[in-house]
Image 1 (cartoon, rainbow, N blue to C red):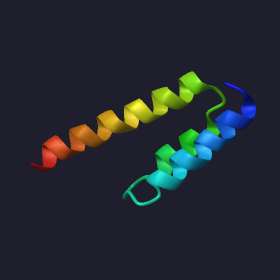
Image 2: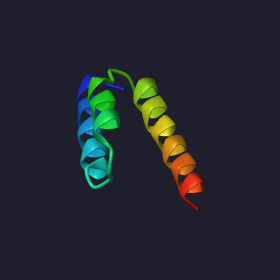
Image 3: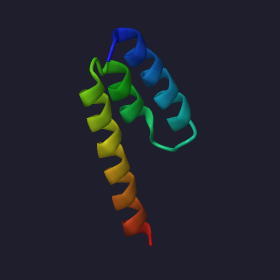
Image 4: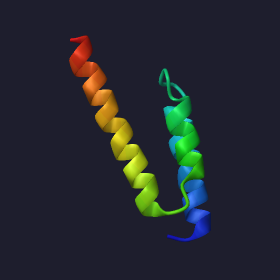
Length: 58
């Protein structure tokens, strides 16, 4: 993935996460990602964390 695409994807991802509580850490990590693989890893880890939180709160 080219640098421009990574930067645009980071922008969109952080914009969508803006509405979620406690998103600052993941948004910072996303903005530091320099590759597609790293960005996907960060997003997948965040999804897993959210799923865990949802299970705990039920």
